[in-house]
Image (cartoon, rainbow, N blue to C red; front, side):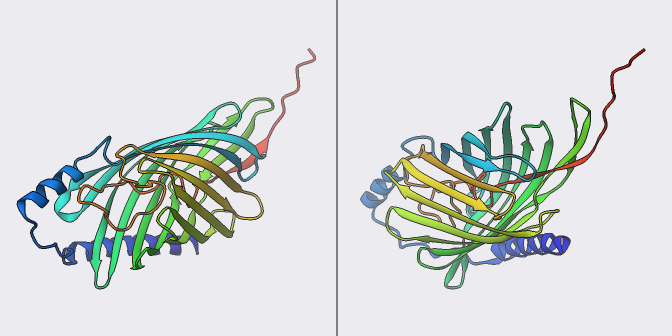
Length: 301
């Protein structure tokens, strides 16, 4: 089942990319007079670090076979043009999460394409490669595909997930407990909507594979404070072993009113290369398997 879902996600991503390259470009508006062009150019000129998104926040988290802990996090995510004629962009980012003694951090890089004309709808796709170093110092690799379509004004659907690539063996002191960690393979369908000018949500439902095998639900809500700042709430739970709750303050350093923690399907301006989310729904959970333990008693000789 898990392998079938993973293959389906990758096949859909490949098909989406092929459709995107064959889709006609979005219709351009009639040429504006010189004065209007100059004014538009001035408005388009970045007022800060264009397409650079940062966020800081606090929350609580519980992972498989671990206790609930408080956390604090900070992230930075930057998008940039790769092939502007195709609306093809790239992104790089990182996130550090302080939990217990050692931080958990991840780095990601990927490609994306948005504003793809699909008849009366608009589509987008993205793929991210993620490296995560857990607080137990396991090095985990995963892939995050994203497929989205805006089916009506301010409403869109996104099919996304986390696909783990490797398992990492751990050696713990104090009796030598051997364990292994891996990313939790997850598939999730999101419905995003803009309820008001300043309030938007993403509601998600999906399934966790690996050895978890249960449904997972998620909610992401945000309020746009001004052109630079937004407040975010993220909740994800499988209602048994793992959950994540956080509140954060996001900063769009380009001052364009963008929120890089959401899946933005359409471009809001020609230079819009807002990166796709790093660390929001689905939250990249990982699980720990204890394989065995041995005790070596002290010598009596």
